[in-house]
Length: 137
Image (cartoon, rainbow, N blue to C red):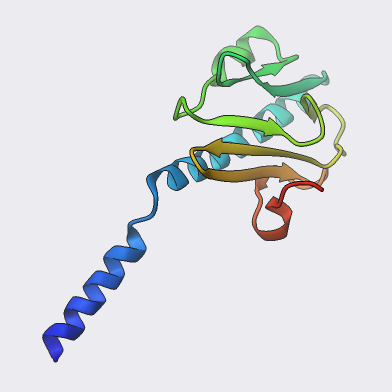
């Protein structure tokens, strides 16, 4: 009986820890994108210029409006080359320099998994959970 209990607990632990790797990757991409967007948003405020973000047609993404030295420090590609992004309701994401931005959302896709990253315009960009992550109607 004790052996069966130990085996059951071990199987449950392994099952819970074995998540789909593409789900983990897209969540990591979402957290990374939120941090990059906040970094560019801060730089936009510091230099006082209009900065935008968009997914590129070659895969990856690009920041528009930052000076060359700042652009060289920011990555241009996804960690997983199969990742794609869709901006909900706009062709680009506005990052500043104004402190209050419109509400914006980006949906990252990897395989059959999606993660939404967004802001209400005042709060920082973050990975959205629950109803906030649902597609716009």
